[in-house]
Length: 134
Length: 267
Image: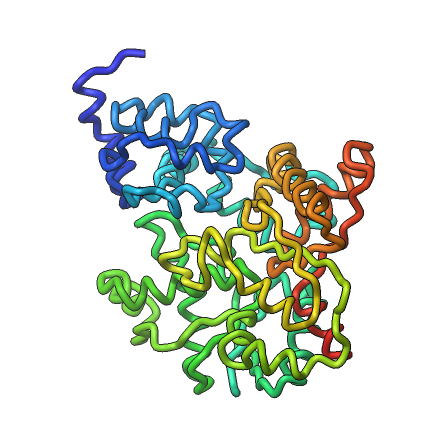
């Protein structure tokens, strides 16, 4: 992938910062977020890498990564971040950039398994559709 | 002691036993809970962005109802509701711009004057674990119970401020007061996968597997939880791991802390 000053200064990075309320340049890549993430093993871009990609303006790559749909917003990472970066908010901003486009929904009611439809608590269903659909 | 009470959607249906046992134990301990009027779903999740003002309206409406009821404290049970209410209240108190927008829309003047509390917190601070221990009619001696905190009760710590985020003790002290043997295990605050169980089941299943094995290997006979979604995930994936023969020794019941409390109070 190619890193250019245009990308680094792109409006998309500013949009992520605006929607999340976080400053991506604050991250100094210590990796504590990825070290403690309970679902990191299935991510293609690790939490600290999400911040690094954003710093380098590689937002397009982030909008297509699986990580956006794997983060459970458990907030273990931001509880440990020495730079006070709220990483789930950065991931949420990226997710919203996808979901707000037409056809961007990740989860449709028809996708739910029989087990989920029968047994899942409302709390889980409401949470999932707030995170994965608009 | 009097409190406004917000049940939330899950406690009226899938987690009815959580509400029933909370109300019966509160009554037995002399706590007066009044359900607020005309409440709606709190939204289940606190909005993690700067743009969704609408997400705040439902919790703020409920907080206004609590204020109208005349009580200082709003008591919650579901960890999801607790997280949403506590963070919303703090945001309203501290963010003037957000407060103005919410009040403009709702045509009201809420400034965060109601205090949001969790039942566990009430048992610790208002009832007191020492007093609670005296009220126990049937001590849970010999019961090896694993408290499972999950995420929403504790994180983010700067906003929730219930207990230490890495090494919490409120659940342990509660179970000790009931006479139970507390099982300590490293995964007690690790996320169960939360809403991923609705869409990415493999990931939630793996997360739950690690928690189950960690508790089991440290001698747990049951999990004690405060969140309906944690209970669902722990139970459902345990069944699957068991059925698949991957963890054949696992048969850990998952109960709400209020069920355990009701048992100890012999209700």
